[in-house]
Amino acid sequence: TNQLFFKFLKATLPKRINQCQTSKQENLLYTNPDYPFQLLWFLKYHTNTRFQVSIEICGVDYPSRKQRFEVVYNSLSVDYNTRIRILTSYDEITPICSVVGIFPSASWWEREVWDMFGVFFSNHPDLRRILTDYGFEGHPLRKDFPLSGYVEVRYDDSEKRVVSEPIEMTQEFRYFDFASPWEQMLLCDESKNKYE
Image 1 (cartoon, helix red, strand yellow):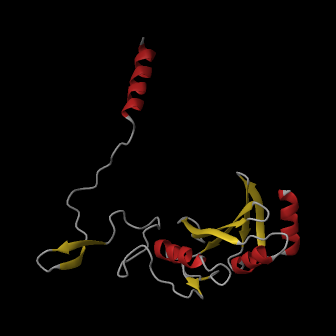
Image 2: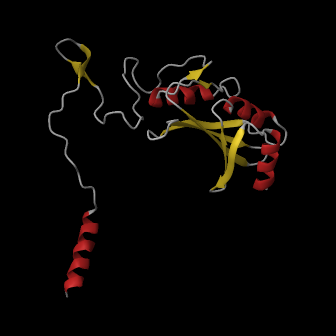
Image 3: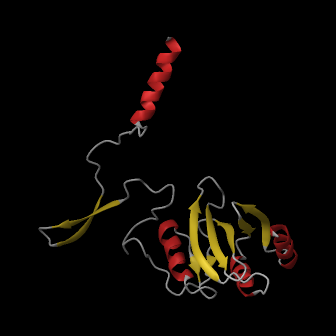
């Protein structure tokens, strides 16, 4: 049934879909950066698809790629008991057309992707930070964001207010070995058996 579904979509929307595949019983559609709005509108309102529930919109950062950010739209068709994932890639400057006109609940998801990754959604009714403070600099889920951040926020008792200061590292960066102590025991046993 997935093959028939993909053939139907490719025949109906030849320029909108780059690649179709199935992974872990989910349908994946890769589309051009200009077409997620049109594709999601079609998938929601067409009789043979009826993906009327937007489950989530999320972002992924691949700094080594030319189009660094991948935006993922997950949708559900209750009528056909099917899920679909639409993936598209963007660079740091290209805006994405907001899908709030199709799925009103997408407003919160798009704000989160904007806040965490810095992907700009054009035509969004209220695009502002949702998880970080308004004065926050940068986007925390980008791979090039520093682990310690840029500023330190703390409450100053003498000034009776919250202050932001440039971050100061009180100790050098240390490398922690998170190997389980049980794994270390197994390695010792293996080397001991090797010499017996």
